Length: 187
Image (cartoon, rainbow, N blue to C red; front, side):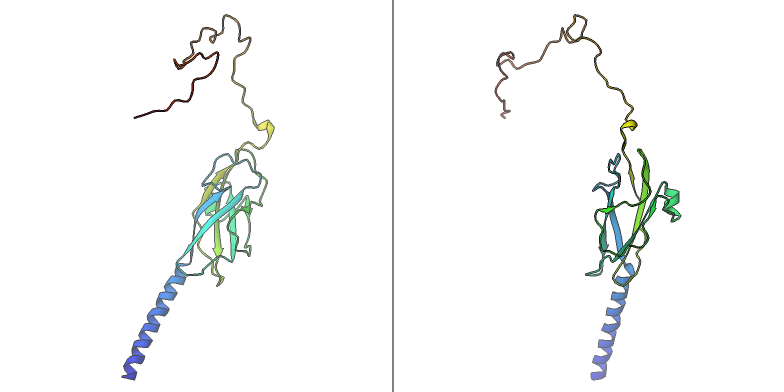
């Protein structure tokens, strides 16, 4: 009887260890990459954007102890593991929110691709996250090259299109004296 219980206990222990090993082998999953709190934003006007990511793990209490960020000018560079704009190297911290970009100076309209990997409490590296992207906005005054759109000339002359305009107004009052009271829709 004792031998049989010992066999069951050993079987349960083996199954538990196999389940634990399977959970640890899945590691940490990195998701929800964000730049300045946005998913793949266009026109970021911050010179050193802040990057964030979320973690998911099947292991209770599992967390990040370090990260490495790669930022590149193209998907090709990023996929080959080249962070030609920034390679943070392994940074020992649990920070995963608002990590400031610390690479080469970014230009207006520049497109940046990035990915991150993290290390857990056992110093095991995760896989790389899916690639994220952001584009820079117009950072300097000379980058703004548009012209104002408007009416050139005197607006009060007889040739202006607004001199003969008919304005739409509610019938409850004279627009020159006061605006009508608030209206409500009743069903």
